[in-house]
Structures are given as C-alpha cells and as structure tokens.
Image 1 (tube, one colour):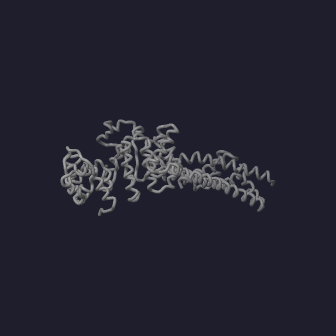
Image 2 (cartoon, rainbow over the protein chains, first blue to last red; image 1 turned 135 degrees about the vertical axis):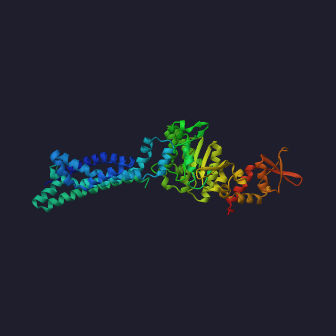
Image 3 (tube, each protein chain N blue to C red; image 1 turned 180 degrees about the vertical axis):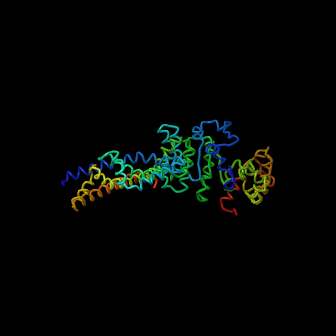
Length: 201
Length: 287
C-alpha cells in the first residue's frame, strides 16, 4: 500500500476520532456538571457512565451495527460512548474540587449563580476537565482501529488486512501509525491543559 | 467586633448580614433598611466580604481579583484599572510588581492584603471580615490590623469583624459583642466590658482582671499627651494609674488634664489608654 493510501486512512482515522471526541465532550461535560450539581443524580450518572466504560467497544459495535448498519455512523457512536466516561467523571471531579472559599467569596461578592459558574467554577475546574478529555482522546484514537471492522476505514484497515493476510509489515504499519497519532494527541492536549492550568497548578 | 470561641455562631451571625445564611427569625437592619427586603445581588455587591481562607480566584491575576466587584458593577475599564492601583497601594502592595501576578505566587500575608483590597474595591459602606488575619503570623497580623484600622477610618467604613482572638478584639474594636453558644453575653465598648464583665464567662474569656491589673501598673504620666489643657477639663494626677483614668472615662469624662505638682503638664483621653495597652501588647509583655 502506498503513502497516499496511508495518509488517506490516517485522515479518516483522525476525522472519526475527532468527531467521536467532540460528541463525547458534548455529552460528557453536561453529564459531569449535572452529577456535580444535582445531589442525588451523582451516583446514578457516574454509575451509568462507569457501566459504559466496562463494555468493550467491540461489544458496543456488535450492538450498534444491526441498528445503524455499517460504516462511519456505528463507529462514531461506539467511540463517542467510549469517550463519555473519562470526560464526565473528570468534569464532576473538577467542579467538586473547586475550593469552597472561592465559591463562598463568589456568592458573597454578589455573583449570580451563572456568573459564579462562568467566572469562577468552570475556569477552576477546566484543567481537570481537560485531563479527562486527554484520557478520552487516547482511548478513542486507539479504539478507532476497530472502525475498520465495520467498514468505516481508518488505520485499522492495515491491522485488519495484516491479520487476514498474515502480513506483519502491514500490521506494524497500522499499529505504528495509530501509536504516533495517539502520541501527537497526548502531546497537543497536554500542552492545552498546561496552558489552562498553569495559573492554578 | 464579634468575639467568641469557635462554634459560638459568630460567623453565622456575620453571614446573615449579606444573606449567605438565611434568617429564620428576626431582622437584620443596615442603615435602618431590612436586608431581607433588598435585592440579594445588589445587597452583596454593596457589602465588602473578606474571609480567613481569603478565597482568591486562582485563575485570575491579583488585579483581576481585586476588580471582581467593580467588574460586576460594570465600571469603565480605565476607572477599574485606576482603582486597582489605588487599592494595591492602599494595602501596601506595589501595583507594578503585584498587579499581574497570580495568587499562588504570593505569601499568605500578601494574599490577605489582596483579599482586603478586593473587599473594599467598590467602596462598600459596610465591610464583613471573618477572621481575615487568622492565617498569618503574629507580626504580619499586627501590621494588617493597624492598616485595616486606618483604612476603615479613612474610608468611613463600618467593619463587622469576627474573631476568636481576644487581643485582636481588644485592639481593634470600637464596640464588642461577646458571643457564646449562639447567645450574646455582652455588648459594649471593650473597656467597659473589661471593667465590668456581665457574666463570669466574659470575665474569664477576656481575662479581665489581668487587663485591669496591667492598667493599674501603668501610670498616666507614661500614656499622656504632653501639652496644654483646657481649664474645664477634669484633672487626674500624673502618677495615678491608667485604671484610675479608665474609671474617669467610664463615668463620662472625655479628656482629662494631667496634673504634676502645681502645674498641668498634658492631657489624656480614652484613646491614649487603649494605645498604651496596645503598645504593651505589641512588645510582648503579655502572658
């Protein structure tokens, strides 16, 4: 397989992972906020989220494919479900670790609940939330390999074909490229988290 | 000044004023207006609030922290910037050095100063302080106390101050409320409370006999202000004790003329007695 071929698959891999991570963040963050905010919902939400964490993505795929068919969509759903737990858990953790004194002062100086959240709680929680996003990104990029099994393409193609053809070179190409992508994501997000957290750390 | 042991309800009482703690019964009046009827957001923005943990916002610079209330009140940018520098100067932090730093780069004492600056940023007529100097060492605390007194005097701010530190209460209070188990034991000026504790508990807490004993060891001569006196002023002997002076003040005199032999050599007022007591405390002669 040629280099353009590899790049095209890498692109699919990245697009799929990014979409799944975005969907996971869009769901995980509100879930985390809800868990931190509404006493009583916390156990239920985090419990549910952790169940999602235990189910392997491959198993999720086998459930999703009969409903959504093959291709990009089922892979996206399975990967987004994978991304939710670390993001929701860290959002909850980040919000609950905001110092009580900061909240007391925020209220005492006359911030409305919305202002206190936007100006104090969220910025203070953000570094922890970003750590969750980072964990999710690594898991998603690694697991996006499975997308090849449902015909969504990506770098998993190499691993799939390498396995079928018994070709270690193909296997290694796929695995190496995935590792490289995961590493790049880790690096970028770590940098972003450090920037957000450097004042508070 | 609200004084009492931990758990006596002094913080709770303080926090009913800006309604962080809701009242179950009774009323809190500020300038004869019931705080329960005020809009809670407006009310809180008009009352300064400083607490022991300081609660600086770690993701904001010192300047941004100080400007919290002005920002909420939507002051103009240039006015906010000028106010930040003014306030930092007021609490003895060089604006150029501190404005753009983050709270974690500051010492405990510096953080407390920023906390005070933030609390008075929008010139609140009332300032609530909950053990604001509890977390700093004795030397820093003493200078912060003195600065706070001056600031309150300059800005004509009424401070409601919570402490469990008897020395701090005697040093700073104009009027003192002694609390125990959620009940007011006594409410009066510090010297009146010292000379006549309403309950045995108040006497023990303030170690009143000891303070009075110390006053009886200090002489008027050492605490007076040299100079001329008014003919209408009641007299006290230069070698009388401050305890005698205190008795005169408690029975209504404002300023006494000090007599040594045949001549009057100076005057002494209530404030001079307090200052003498403070000076004695500051050099560490206290048990």
